[in-house]
Image (cartoon, rainbow, N blue to C red; front, side):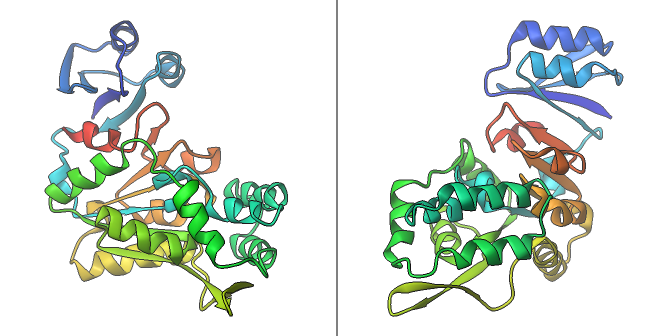
Length: 276
């Protein structure tokens, strides 16, 4: 196993500190933003030292490349994009604080996702459908590195899936914008131009996210080890467990525990820098 460290702007002093701590025999540059520390050995202070130096780190098998993978699956809210869409929609009703508190509890794994979604969506009843467009146009932004990541994955021939416990209004637009092969999310019921406070069909929760990953993976004839999944909260645990390489992006502690890699200082495109 080789230790790889990365950041959007790697501090040379921090890099040398990690190398010294881990007994590295050689520092090999992978990209301008990532380095492989050959011969590095695990150390109890590694995580704290990297964090202090603004570095992300991951242990990777020798020879692992992006070409080893064939499928990338990512969450949307607070992973691909910078907001929780439902919280911003609720703000149109003057209910952001109430809804955001339920969202946070669900993301931390303190509340069942299905229950939390049903409660939150019910509070949106009566809101004009146009509010969704306002959130998309005025409040939603891609997280740093999202566009570069998708371009890099597509160049590598890796199929891409956007799967979300959020809403199809947003996933379909992001699918078209970024070129995802598939997108799955919850559909808000709209009657006479207003939200009813209900979701149509089965709720996309953590189990459903993992099921979508497994189905697309099997359709492509891939092994579990050929799948990368990225997320930020408790609802993403099942799909990260179903993937060969799980990425926790600026994530809650409950997800970090099951991820292979935590990106706290890099953009989403840090994933590309891991493998060169």
